[in-house]
Length: 180
Image (cartoon, rainbow, N blue to C red; front, side, top):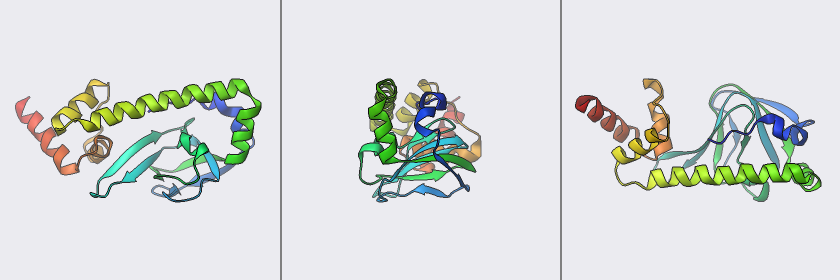
Protein backbone atom coordinates (compact mmCIF):
# COMPACT_ATOMS: atom_id res chain seq x y z
CA UNK A 1 0.00 0.00 0.00
CA UNK A 2 1.02 3.57 -0.54
CA UNK A 3 3.04 4.88 2.39
CA UNK A 4 2.57 8.44 3.56
CA UNK A 5 5.47 9.64 5.64
CA UNK A 6 4.05 11.26 8.74
CA UNK A 7 6.50 14.15 8.33
CA UNK A 8 4.67 15.18 5.15
CA UNK A 9 1.45 15.72 7.09
CA UNK A 10 2.82 16.60 10.52
CA UNK A 11 1.32 20.10 10.25
CA UNK A 12 -2.10 18.53 9.69
CA UNK A 13 -1.89 16.22 12.70
CA UNK A 14 0.51 18.14 14.98
CA UNK A 15 -2.07 18.88 17.69
CA UNK A 16 -4.29 15.85 17.06
CA UNK A 17 -5.39 13.78 20.01
CA UNK A 18 -3.82 10.35 20.45
CA UNK A 19 -5.82 7.17 20.89
CA UNK A 20 -4.64 3.62 21.56
CA UNK A 21 -6.36 0.61 20.00
CA UNK A 22 -6.12 -3.02 21.09
CA UNK A 23 -5.61 -5.89 18.62
CA UNK A 24 -8.87 -6.54 16.79
CA UNK A 25 -10.46 -3.31 17.96
CA UNK A 26 -12.37 -1.26 15.41
CA UNK A 27 -11.06 2.22 14.69
CA UNK A 28 -14.38 2.75 12.87
CA UNK A 29 -17.11 0.66 11.22
CA UNK A 30 -18.85 0.83 7.85
CA UNK A 31 -21.80 3.17 8.17
CA UNK A 32 -20.26 5.25 10.96
CA UNK A 33 -20.34 8.99 10.36
CA UNK A 34 -16.96 10.38 9.33
CA UNK A 35 -16.01 12.88 11.99
CA UNK A 36 -12.23 12.34 12.13
CA UNK A 37 -9.18 11.65 10.03
CA UNK A 38 -6.76 9.09 11.42
CA UNK A 39 -2.97 8.95 11.07
CA UNK A 40 -1.32 5.83 12.47
CA UNK A 41 1.59 6.66 14.76
CA UNK A 42 2.47 3.04 15.58
CA UNK A 43 1.15 -0.42 14.80
CA UNK A 44 -0.92 -1.56 11.84
CA UNK A 45 -4.56 -1.46 10.82
CA UNK A 46 -6.55 -2.76 7.87
CA UNK A 47 -9.52 -1.40 5.98
CA UNK A 48 -11.83 -4.35 5.47
CA UNK A 49 -15.00 -4.82 3.47
CA UNK A 50 -17.20 -7.87 3.92
CA UNK A 51 -18.87 -8.99 0.70
CA UNK A 52 -22.37 -10.40 0.34
CA UNK A 53 -20.71 -13.74 -0.41
CA UNK A 54 -19.00 -13.84 2.97
CA UNK A 55 -15.53 -12.89 1.74
CA UNK A 56 -13.37 -10.55 3.78
CA UNK A 57 -11.60 -8.17 1.40
CA UNK A 58 -8.70 -6.02 2.52
CA UNK A 59 -8.84 -2.59 0.89
CA UNK A 60 -5.85 -1.02 2.65
CA UNK A 61 -3.08 -2.12 4.97
CA UNK A 62 -1.76 0.85 6.88
CA UNK A 63 1.25 1.25 9.13
CA UNK A 64 3.00 4.06 10.96
CA UNK A 65 2.81 7.35 9.09
CA UNK A 66 -0.18 6.34 6.97
CA UNK A 67 -3.63 7.88 6.94
CA UNK A 68 -6.56 5.47 7.03
CA UNK A 69 -9.38 5.80 4.53
CA UNK A 70 -7.96 8.87 2.80
CA UNK A 71 -11.06 9.51 0.70
CA UNK A 72 -13.25 9.65 3.81
CA UNK A 73 -12.30 13.33 4.15
CA UNK A 74 -14.99 13.89 1.48
CA UNK A 75 -17.52 11.28 2.57
CA UNK A 76 -20.36 11.40 5.07
CA UNK A 77 -19.96 7.78 6.22
CA UNK A 78 -17.24 5.15 6.17
CA UNK A 79 -17.70 2.48 3.51
CA UNK A 80 -15.65 -0.20 5.28
CA UNK A 81 -14.33 -1.24 8.68
CA UNK A 82 -10.91 -0.27 10.04
CA UNK A 83 -9.50 -2.86 12.43
CA UNK A 84 -6.27 -2.84 14.42
CA UNK A 85 -4.04 -5.79 13.42
CA UNK A 86 -2.15 -5.47 16.69
CA UNK A 87 -1.77 -2.77 19.30
CA UNK A 88 -1.67 0.60 17.59
CA UNK A 89 -1.68 4.28 18.38
CA UNK A 90 -3.35 6.83 16.16
CA UNK A 91 -3.51 10.59 15.86
CA UNK A 92 -7.17 11.56 15.51
CA UNK A 93 -8.06 14.93 14.01
CA UNK A 94 -11.51 16.30 13.27
CA UNK A 95 -12.39 16.07 9.59
CA UNK A 96 -13.44 19.71 9.60
CA UNK A 97 -10.04 20.84 10.92
CA UNK A 98 -8.25 18.54 8.48
CA UNK A 99 -10.08 20.05 5.50
CA UNK A 100 -9.62 23.63 6.71
CA UNK A 101 -5.87 23.04 7.07
CA UNK A 102 -5.65 21.65 3.54
CA UNK A 103 -7.46 24.72 2.20
CA UNK A 104 -5.08 27.07 3.97
CA UNK A 105 -1.86 25.33 2.86
CA UNK A 106 -1.62 24.79 -0.91
CA UNK A 107 1.64 22.85 -0.59
CA UNK A 108 -0.03 20.39 1.80
CA UNK A 109 -3.06 20.16 -0.48
CA UNK A 110 -0.77 19.36 -3.41
CA UNK A 111 1.02 16.64 -1.42
CA UNK A 112 -2.36 15.28 -0.32
CA UNK A 113 -3.57 15.20 -3.95
CA UNK A 114 -0.43 13.29 -4.96
CA UNK A 115 -1.07 10.79 -2.16
CA UNK A 116 -4.67 10.33 -3.30
CA UNK A 117 -3.52 9.75 -6.88
CA UNK A 118 -1.08 7.07 -5.70
CA UNK A 119 -3.82 5.46 -3.60
CA UNK A 120 -6.10 5.34 -6.67
CA UNK A 121 -3.33 3.69 -8.69
CA UNK A 122 -2.79 1.08 -5.98
CA UNK A 123 -6.56 0.43 -5.73
CA UNK A 124 -6.78 -0.03 -9.50
CA UNK A 125 -3.95 -2.54 -9.40
CA UNK A 126 -5.70 -4.49 -6.63
CA UNK A 127 -8.95 -4.39 -8.63
CA UNK A 128 -7.14 -5.61 -11.74
CA UNK A 129 -5.62 -8.51 -9.81
CA UNK A 130 -8.98 -9.38 -8.24
CA UNK A 131 -10.65 -9.36 -11.65
CA UNK A 132 -8.51 -12.24 -12.88
CA UNK A 133 -10.66 -15.35 -13.14
CA UNK A 134 -8.40 -17.96 -11.58
CA UNK A 135 -6.82 -18.04 -8.13
CA UNK A 136 -3.55 -19.08 -9.79
CA UNK A 137 -3.62 -15.95 -11.96
CA UNK A 138 -4.43 -13.68 -9.04
CA UNK A 139 -1.66 -15.13 -6.91
CA UNK A 140 0.80 -14.97 -9.81
CA UNK A 141 -0.01 -11.32 -10.52
CA UNK A 142 0.20 -10.43 -6.81
CA UNK A 143 3.61 -12.10 -6.50
CA UNK A 144 4.78 -10.45 -9.73
CA UNK A 145 4.17 -7.05 -8.09
CA UNK A 146 6.93 -7.86 -5.59
CA UNK A 147 4.74 -9.20 -2.80
CA UNK A 148 5.93 -12.14 -0.71
CA UNK A 149 3.94 -14.80 1.10
CA UNK A 150 3.89 -14.22 4.85
CA UNK A 151 4.41 -17.00 7.36
CA UNK A 152 1.96 -19.87 7.05
CA UNK A 153 -0.27 -18.66 9.90
CA UNK A 154 -1.01 -15.44 7.98
CA UNK A 155 -1.90 -16.82 4.55
CA UNK A 156 -5.57 -15.93 5.14
CA UNK A 157 -4.47 -12.27 4.88
CA UNK A 158 -3.26 -12.95 1.33
CA UNK A 159 -6.59 -14.63 0.54
CA UNK A 160 -8.38 -11.48 1.74
CA UNK A 161 -6.06 -9.31 -0.34
CA UNK A 162 -6.76 -11.43 -3.44
CA UNK A 163 -10.51 -11.63 -2.79
CA UNK A 164 -10.59 -15.44 -2.60
CA UNK A 165 -11.43 -17.93 0.11
CA UNK A 166 -8.69 -19.27 2.36
CA UNK A 167 -9.40 -22.75 1.08
CA UNK A 168 -8.97 -21.74 -2.56
CA UNK A 169 -5.65 -20.08 -1.79
CA UNK A 170 -4.44 -23.07 0.25
CA UNK A 171 -5.32 -25.40 -2.65
CA UNK A 172 -3.35 -23.20 -5.08
CA UNK A 173 -0.34 -23.05 -2.77
CA UNK A 174 -0.46 -26.82 -2.35
CA UNK A 175 -0.67 -27.26 -6.13
CA UNK A 176 2.37 -25.00 -6.58
CA UNK A 177 4.36 -26.96 -3.99
CA UNK A 178 3.58 -30.25 -5.74
CA UNK A 179 4.46 -28.79 -9.17
CA UNK A 180 7.63 -27.08 -7.92
